Length: 285
Image (cartoon, rainbow, N blue to C red; front, top):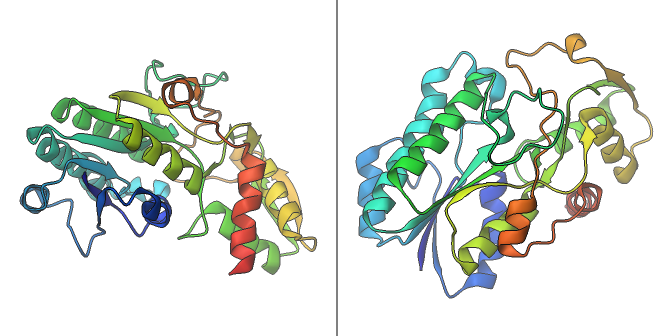
């Protein structure tokens, strides 16, 4: 198959690129904004037709959650309109699409793990533009797999793990919220899940994916420092109200992963095990 990967230089796209060598029966077209402007509908149509693309894995997104509150135009362009262009173009060719979405489509007030059939209720511009993107890709490409994920990190790009490692080395004390609960997701594990789905055959619908287990951002930070051997920084728990942000975060955004595990026979690693793997890679760099 000819497979288009968008956002190939981001956290998830970079991990997919590392794994592509194990799937050399396919031809991957790795693109970022320099290779393909996904906000240009004609450019998207031309690229997909010219390269006879069979499927699209959309890893591109506007993910600056707080900036999105004042930049709705760009957030909408990247999270809603661009996925719609890709879905329409690949849908016309009878192809498939894997579209990555977010736990932010929920407001986090449920307090039991979210399943795919729960009604979305976003509380931020970012969440609203991502939900609109989900609806758009489902409309324009019937063979679309939407994967909602959360708390993504990797050795690539900017993310919470790398920030906490840096701050742990710079500061003697650090405050992190303890009353927002979710599950970290190692981008490598998500990349494996996506390529497994592609290889076994994309089954349309909404799926949830994160690592196994549950923690708060405070717990996450403590684990990062413990695994990395950071001992000079005291981490203290904060209430969300003590750390105001432009965008409202879900208080509880644990995702139930039963559907994707049963559909594709996945064994998903525990979040601390994957975190240790990522930190080892960062240390080796």
